[in-house]
Length: 294
Length: 294
Image (cartoon, rainbow over all chains, first blue to last red; front, top):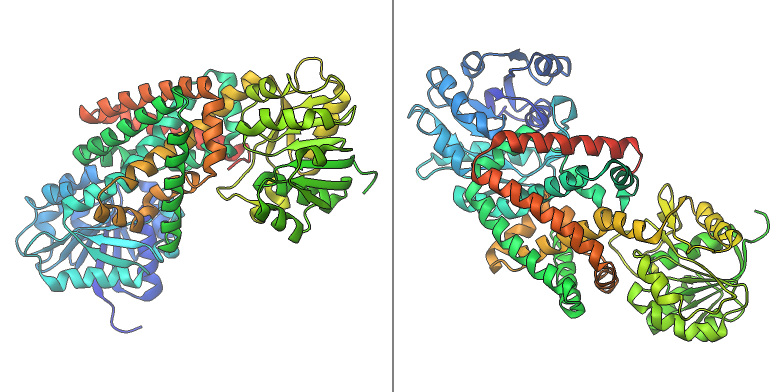
C-alpha cells in the first residue's frame, strides 16, 4: 500500500454502491480521511456503526468542504439539487464524480452549478445487487466488472486518471466513452431488462389472489429471476427511467416490435420461426460466458 | 431403502430432466431395472457411459415392453407420435407419466392412443436449468421444488400415489390439479418469462455489431439474467409455446397492456406511477423468499 489516492473523500449518499466503495477505500487505505452525507438518520447511524467512514453528516456543504474527491452516490434525480448545494463549498481543484446509471443528464444537471475550478468526471461502475442500503454493500461487489467514465470534452486527463485508479483498485476494468453512447448501451443492457422485469412482476401481482399465491409457489420456473431484478431500489429506478427517457423509449419500441412478431408466430403456429430465434439467443449466452460476465 | 417403487422404468427421452430422474432412481434403488430410449446415438452413448440406466435403445416399442412405469421426457411436440408407437407394446396396468411443461395437450395427444388398461398420470416437475442433455442432469435438481400432477378424472388413485412417491423421493413437494389450471399458472410463471427473455435477447442480437459487442461486455447490469433464461432448449420451448398457445397469448396480452401503460408513464414523466409499481414488485420478491423458492 503506497500513498493514498485522495486526501479526503466525501460520499454524497451512501447506499449499496457508495458503501461498497467506502469499504474498498477503507480496505486499501485510498484516502487519508472520509465523510458521508446522508439525509436519513438511520443511514448515518448504519454508516457510523459499520465504520465505513470517519464522519457522517446531513449537510452537503459540510461534507464537501476540504474534500479532493466528491463522489455522488444518490439516485440521479437528486443531482441538480445536490450540485446547487455543494457548489459554493467545493475546494478548488476537487474532483466531482458519481456512480449513476445515466450519464448525459448528470452532465446536464451538474455542469451549470459547478465552479470552473473543479473537475467533473462522471462514472458508472456497472455492478450491483437487488438490495439497497449501506448494510448490504461489500468490497467485492466491483470485482471483475466494468466501470464506464464519461468525462466531458476538455476534462483534465489527470483527474480522469485518478478516478480510473480508484475503480481499478476496486477490481474493475475501466472504459471511457461518450455520455450519450453510454446511455444508449445501458438502455438495452440494463434499463430495458429492468423495465420488463418490473412489468411482468406487476402483471403477476394484478392476478386474482389464488392465482397469485400459485405464481409465488411455482416461481422457480423462470418468474423468480425477474422478481430479483424487480426488487431493485424503486426511487433509483424511477429516476433512471425519467432521466434516460429517450433511449429507453427507443429501445422499448424495438423490443415491442420483436415481441409482436413473436406473438404472431405463436398465433400462426410457426414453429420454425420460434426455433430459429431460440437457437440464436442461445449463442449470445455463450458469448457472455466467454467474456467472463456470466 | 425398502422395496423398489417400480419393477422396470422406461425413459422415453433422457435429457436434462430424464437423466436427473434416472440419477435419483439409481441413487435410491427405485426400480429393479431401467431402460432409456433416445433417437440420437450420442445421447444413448452418454446415457450408457454415465451408467444412468441398465439398457439403451432407439426403439420406443422395445423400451416400453415390460415396463410398469413409462416416463416420457421428450419435448411435448413429440408425444402424439411416441404414444402411437408405444401403444401396442405397453404392459397391462403400466403407468404412463411425463415431465412436460404443458399438460392439457399432453392429455389430448396421449389419451386417444393409449389402451384402456394403462394408467395415465401426467406430471410436471418444476425444476430445470438452462442446460440440456443427459450430461447436465444431477440428482439434486428437484430438491425443495414443486411437482404438479394432473391426472384426468377417473385415474386410479393408486397410480397417482406411485408417481407421487417417486417425486417425493426426488425431494419434491407434490400438488395435484386440473391440467387447464396448470397451464394457466405456468403461462405466467414460466412461459411468459421465457418468451420475454427470448425476445429481449433477440432484440439485442439484432443491434449493429459494435453495440452488440458492448451489450455483451456490460451485460452484468441486468441483461445477462435474461440470457441465461434465453439459453434454454430451443425445441423444448418451441413446443411449449405452440402447445400452450391460448394461455400464453392471453397472458402476453395482459403483459403488453401493462407495458404500454408503463411506457406512457415514462413518456409523460409520471414518477409517482413508476415508483408505486416498483415498490409493489419489491414486495413480491419478499413473498418468494418467504416461500423458500428464491
